[in-house]
Length: 224
Image (cartoon, rainbow, N blue to C red; front, side):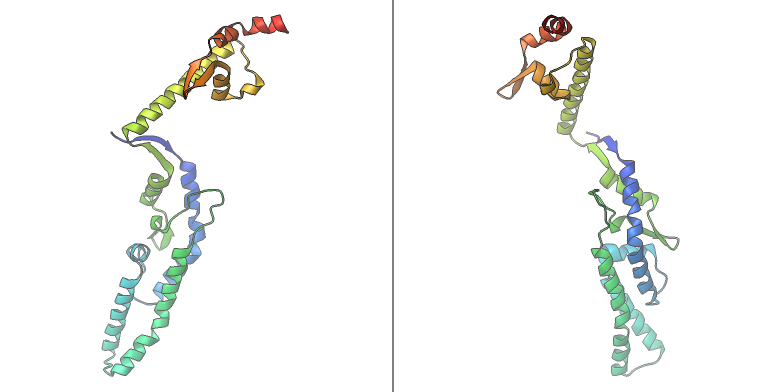
């Protein structure tokens, strides 16, 4: 069956998107440390690689970049080459540390169960942001509830019939000026306690309850 959308919580989307502000200091720190490697402009492709694949590929590229730069300097002494390479390791370590810090970070969501994940964030026009596609992905993953199979649809249809029946019974009782006993509870529980009995996990109607309800006002005056 085709999925049926039951609910889309756009307020939750707004709250999740607001978590980006908590990420920004760490995101900007990663960008700064990458820029310090002087390997070219930081981009969304590089950011997604960091988030999804880690920094192994970037480390390999950085090593190749350094080796090419050293060759341009006509340095041939192996010891000197290794010292130059080792001297640049702290620069890359700063990037590695900032990436680890970013990936460990979890935004404070208080009572909200769902927070913004790194995979939803993009880097466009020199800023970290949530694109239209990012927001659509957040909606789909976190803010929408679907009926996805026939079992779910059958249960939903039966519950819909139950709520519709409740509304009709409530209207009947209101027209009769019927007021259930305080101990009966509220909502469906009140109707069940006043009109139904449960045997072997199945409900049946209490026969006398119908006449009592339809004669409720008359009986109340008679016995008051």
